[in-house]
Length: 201
Image (cartoon, rainbow, N blue to C red):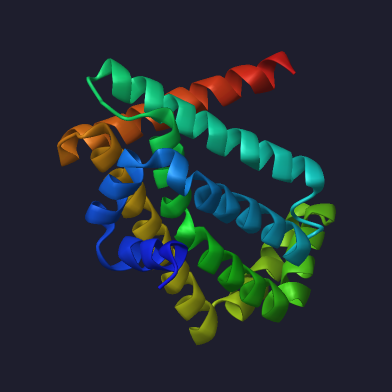
């Protein structure tokens, strides 16, 4: 079996062992991890060219890189042992659920495109008309299939978060609690950095 396929199966079936192996051989798995990042961003761009303009792709890439750098630095401050290449590789493979979320987003957008356009058009209406038209549109969006898509997307998001924590834990050689704390601190730090950049620009 191709090693790239095997490590993908291991991430799905035995994520802790897989991330430990990836962390110890970061450079070896780096091409595969970068492929997952690039594929996901390009896939999103080609599926949703209106929503994901090229500038948005660049910003998305910058945000992911910022998160990885912060997880690395904060983890090191907390006594982590991760190598940067190993952490990047592990986070790349932890990004796998985003590929499936792109498919779900595409399906939801395709079957609800007309309703979504009408929702965006509401902003041009007077306030009294917005309330009158918004409720029927929301009812159109709350269908059994859309609820199924939302639940599936939520589960994929939870899976992705779990993989991120495991990737941090195994590469930094942390306990689970410290890995979760590292992710939480990273989210606050990333929010502060992006807010500062937004203010400066």
